[in-house]
Image 1 (spheres, rainbow, N blue to C red):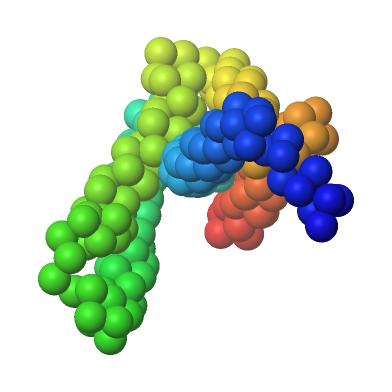
Image 2: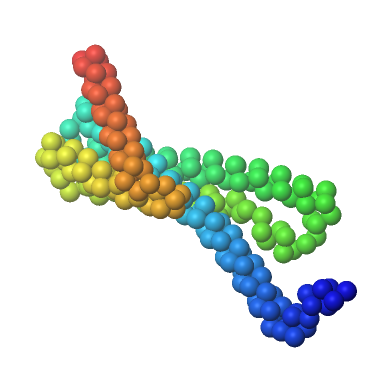
Length: 216
């Protein structure tokens, strides 16, 4: 019994220990909430970076492919603009359908659990329209890079070189951003994106060139 009282006594004599424990526990909970919120933001940012990278690479590859058989700047720019508009619309529609499906699934689950009238819970559901707009905007921003690189250069070879240069720089930037958001190795991820972009543009240019020779 004496031992039992001696173990309890310090807590009664020093209530600050209990108070400190409560403060530490609240701090840990706040940190967990902050990490959780950061994770959500990181997911959206990473999706935006990937969308911009997709717009950059697909539009640049399309411009390089057409540039393999048509050397005038107008054709290349029109091709890039068409790729930007078509790609942004495609991304927006795909994202809208995908997120709306997720919205329906989560709403059905809330109804089964009896939470469908809880407005605060509904506000946490994904917004298909916001996702579609964000995806289209990210794609368009990426696609603008090769367009700006080619818009003011009339010489064919210089224009191709400038497009490759600005796209390469942008690929490195997007690769680095994606690596930082995904907590991946910076240099390795950036080089992976850069080499993949070079391959995409090179294959598109080469195959289109071959088709152009066959069609002559």
